[in-house]
Length: 625
Image 1 (cartoon, rainbow, N blue to C red):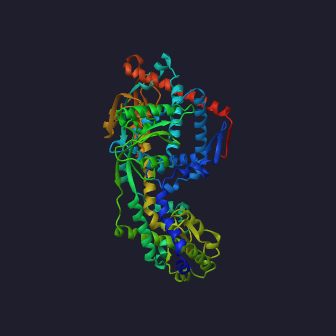
Image 2: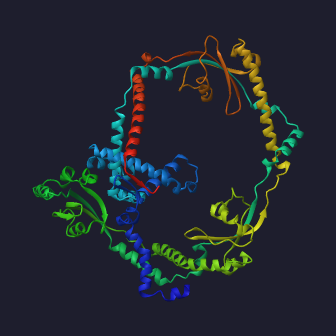
Image 3: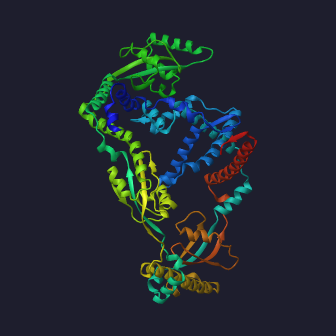
């Protein structure tokens, strides 16, 4: 098949293949991708306004990225986007009803505000300045066009205005402030001693008889999982490169085309003054007045800063930077073809509005050498031809592995390597056996019980695999020698916990009988500490101990005694001796303002949630989720 493919790859057919490889580079980033399919498919409708599949995909991708940023070591494959879709749709619905309520109340965002904000985004800057090319590239990477991204920003800002408007309605009363200050500024005096766990762990020993008794009584804890060993054959395009013969003529044609395209390409540094189209045609009068000022000798950059409605470039004097030939709308490109460097165009109309253009500079593109291009072109052609061959070889793999006595013969027929996995369980594998698809296939009835090869598994667009059972390792009781150390540690921990608790309860009895923490600690040669005027949320004390202290009852004449076991296993005995309520009047003016604002914000948050719930209940919502 491949030989026939190569033999017949002449003329138009060869041209089509070359176009397939070259055209994606030329068309990268075309906005038309946003105008079909997912852009218009509706996943929800809120009061007659659509939420599209594309918007949902963008929001899901953002939610996934936020999860990955929060949990740095998480495997991205563990974040299932399909499970995120339903909650994200509900979030988008809530945003939509809030946005609609904001618009109904006359809220909006001026375009200049949006563009000024864009100018400050570091990801859109080069050398500290807003860069149009970088801006458009970053948006394409995120799946947005400039118009859709600006719409998203507008929506977010209007929604934010609405939320802030509700937040400013929150208020607090003086009794509330005093009550909260009494709690947040409360101080407590307490003493505590610590019985450390580590020395006991080192000193105690567990008799061998106890280890064996525990082992025999809890054997379910020591049964290993069933494991499998499989043999498998993988198929990727890289496995087929030896079967691919790339003709030098094909390489030469693509290299020549790339060199010719680079040689003909040039970029021009352009500045513009843009006036957006108006229904009353007032834009024509405005651009004519600007043109008259230019002809009278006023500076193009100054007029652009003052009048241009392309706010992303107006503050740079209308400078669009260097733009590759053909990237501008056709009317603008044709007008620029007529200009020499330094000249200003007449009035030009486009779908965006009316323009005045100035050609600031020109530069030719760098033309790559044949030697630099040929290796990558040959590699790309090799992969392309290997990909063309892959479906045929996958079919062969399916035919040969179906009811095959051995995958070894299959691998031999296809010139592939027969590989053998390490033992793996349903829960844990490595390499390909960490893939859930592989694990499910290995533990399926046909493979596990009937002893036949699996179906050909598609692990990726360019990666398939077929497997068969080589060895089944049944679940079994792990020998005592293998688990002895774990059992010994467990029994030590149990013994030490009992000893610590008994010792601690005895010391607590002394303190309750009238001895102080200091006296008991010195008697027992234990470390002790005192913490005075300790606040609920601040201090250098152990957080576990402080949280426990502020959960204890207030002393009524006698100290309150309590204990806790820390996360590290240490036993802590506490004696709370004094509680002093916070005094709002003793706070600084700034602290009082912050406390009052906190109460008001909390009230506003409750109000906002209630209002949002009311909006949702009264909205006409249709959703697929």
